[in-house]
Image (tube, rainbow, N blue to C red; front, side, top):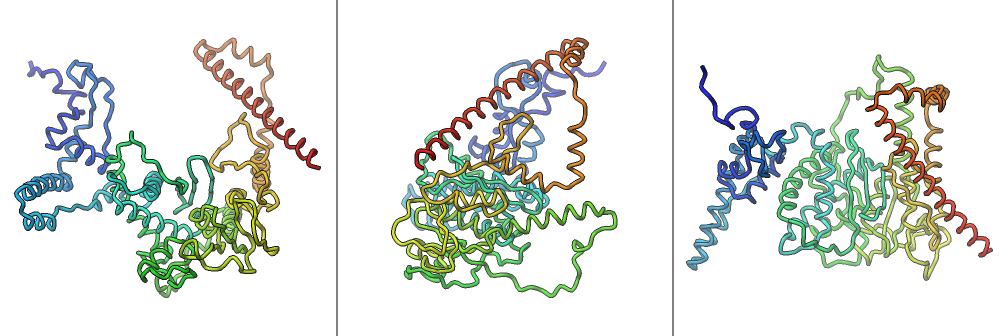
Length: 517
């Protein structure tokens, strides 16, 4: 007879470890343990059977995998945490004994750690990092707009702003921006980086209120890792398009009345303005022929034509504003509009008294459009169009320059539709979105249209046939079918309400137009 094992020494109980046990094993405080788990990407898990793991007890506890805790025990940053804890004790003792020399020496030898090796562990390849860039970029953009407080240092805000500006310059140089949407929460962007969509949100440039119920210590731990990650990504992205990193301006001279800044500050402000191109690396002579220019033998003619058509559409989108010279008025959001316009090949500037980086004045006769968000006052130029900021975003989403008449100052703007919404069968589709979808259908290849016709010609069951099929169904499948039909009826009633609401709004607008006439 074999040796009997005690309860909790085999099976699922050996795979998990409680948080308090992990703290004792690693000899860490709870804040340091949370910080280390965030940096390493380790999160709590939920056992399938808590009683087996907790030796029969049903108490609510937080569990981790034993292998994850064993992995943390060998992390070099763990030793740095312990060294920093010892450093704080020595520093407090020196300050308490009034020994300024000792305290100064300890401050100079303060333990410092880097997260480079953790980034390489979590993202073995560059594409892995790009796939996980959405959250990192959104967090960096958020911190770049926060004010300096007792919880957030000004150094962190400045570093986040620098990293985001560098990323924006890459998007401008590569013309990889694809979608823009002005929402209540902020401005949504989507760029295509190495054939992967990267989506992030940028808050509006208002005074940010710091919520009291947010633990900024945890957020600062995330931002500490994300800064290192985004720094690696920016370096790789700049090299891929042949730009110097850190970025350098091709021409530091800018049209500005501010002359109190030094050369380094002027260059930093010019880079942050996004109005000028960056200095490129010296190009090496490349005699090799790129393989991507030649089709593979296995590729079909139809696939090649489809790929060429998509490339032509992308090329037109990338140069959407190439023939536009746009001036921004004082009241419009400058940072986001400059980024959008320059990402699609346009020229943009603003008043030199407003900020550094302006490239031409308002009196320039070559200006084609001026973005305004107030009733026109003062001098007007007949050689340009005055439009509201929504014209920029809608033109990007429709992939063409929309008629400016719908976006004149003091004109009721058309509906600003989100390009991130994917319509399903039975959903309510606004007329403007339907017009956009119809234009996209016209660009569909003929073979796809034939497939759509074949699908539409397939016979559907009559009401009697559906009832007969429902009668022979098992009870379980019949209940599931009834739930599906109920959800469809509910969705159709909601669509009907939205259609009636839209019709009432259109009727009111038509009545107003008649009264004005």
